Each structure stands twice: as structure tokens, then as C-alpha cells.
Length: 302
Image 1 (cartoon, helix red, strand yellow):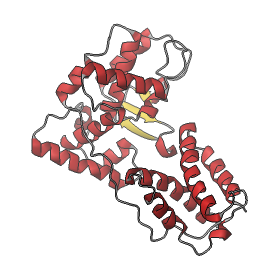
Image 2 (cartoon, helix red, strand yellow):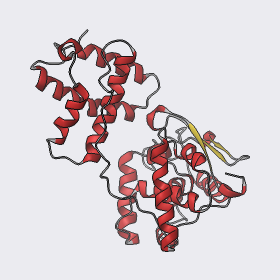
Image 3 (cartoon, rainbow, N blue to C red):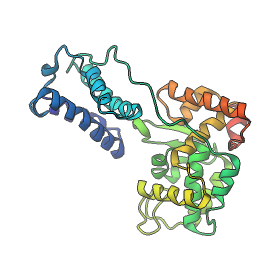
Image 4 (tube, rainbow, N blue to C red):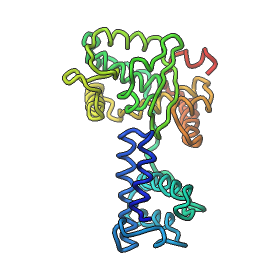
């Protein structure tokens, strides 16, 4: 069986439950891994098999190969996570040996996480024209990321029926890593979403749509929104994921449970969630006014 055959098997397996965006991520990241295999093996992946790499430190050598390219560790870790998923699939299906055993990932050198402060959120909120459909739509998308911890992709894929208004719960389907989860939604945000829906003429089942096409908002539309908000609010460090950082940090500052936060955030790795413990502790020590989450996250025992 060739490497190309195993790749096709892996992608068919993932296509059953992964979103198109996740599949594109797999495809792009694995291309880097396969380029490495072709460099080492001297042939295309259609002609290579794992027999060509028998008894080698394949994954460890791939990490070394990436580090020699003088790219940041955070980028290396991104490539390696996808390569690990592919190699783990092959090992579990008795296609190759365990190339992952004993290999450590390079340390994370990503930019330290930051948060939004209460006065900054007020500045941003002032940028939304709440008298228009577009303004209300953008306000709701922004606050779903900030007050519920949703990723921008999850906001774009959200449907009206995913919101349980009686229990203040959002059912997030087809999330990152092909998982589903729940999180809470404050009363004020449900009201704003309902006001937006009253203004919106939609032909799509998705909650947030383009005013021109009626199709779901795109990733480019989200990028354009944050670029506009950054300029109008004067907050240069503003980006979509900053809102999730703020949500997680504010939740822990308010006394939230770390394991519940892992569920709310959709993290499979507990160590990723623990990063926010340090950010919350630092914010408390400095006495900064991090944006406050709605009391619903604390009055229900979460």
C-alpha cells in the first residue's frame, strides 16, 4: 500500500465527520509532511510506502527537518499535530509502526495571550449601528465569541434552532476537531439575536447571512468585520480569537470551574485550558478590569 493510498483512506475516514474547513486544514498541513517524505524517499508518495521508512525515526526526523527551516515553534507544532493524527491513524490500522513513541513536540513560542478590558468592549459596542440589520448581526456575532466563547467558524455555522432559549444553552455542532459541545448564552444576547432575526429576511437555515447573497457569512466577512472594528475602536490588538481568550479568563476570574471551562471551550487537551489559569491569576494580581461575563455562568453553579 502506497503513502498516497493511506492518505486517501485517512481523508475518507475524516470526511465522515469533519467540516470542509477541517479537511482543507488536513490537506494543507499534510502536504508539508508528504513533501518531506518525497525529499527523503526520493520518489512521489504514489511510489512510496511505509516500508521505505521501516525502523526510522520518521516523525522525530520530520520535527528536526522543520526546525532547520527556521520557522517558529508554533508553526512547527501546527504541522506536527496534523502529521501525528495521520500517523496515529495508520498505526491504529496496522499500516505502519509507531513513529510517535518518545517524540516530544518543540515548546510553544506563540505570542502571549491577551484579553479585552471592560472599557474596550464599550468602545467596540459603540461601533455597531443597532438600527440596521447589519449592525445587529455584527453585534450578535461579536458577542457570541466574547460572551459564549464561540470560535468564528462556529458562529458562521450556527443555526437558529441550535439555541435552546428555555435553558439558555447553545448546541455547537461540527466544531473544531469534528466535535460537538454545549455552552451557555446570556438572556441579553438571546434578546438581541431575536431582534436581529425580526429584521432579517433569510432564505438560509444559518443564523448569520450576507445581506447581499443571503448565504452564510464567510470567513473573509469575519476578517473584514474585525479589521473595521480595529480601525474604528482604535484597539490595534483586536482579533477574533482575543474574544475567546477574554471569555476563558473572565470565567476563571469569576470563580468558574476549570473542567467546565474545558467543555465550554471545546478543548480536547486539558493542558490547553490550564493556560488560562495563569492569565486569570496575572489579571487578578495586576488588578486590571477584564470584561465581565454575564452572571448566568456563575449563578447556575458553573
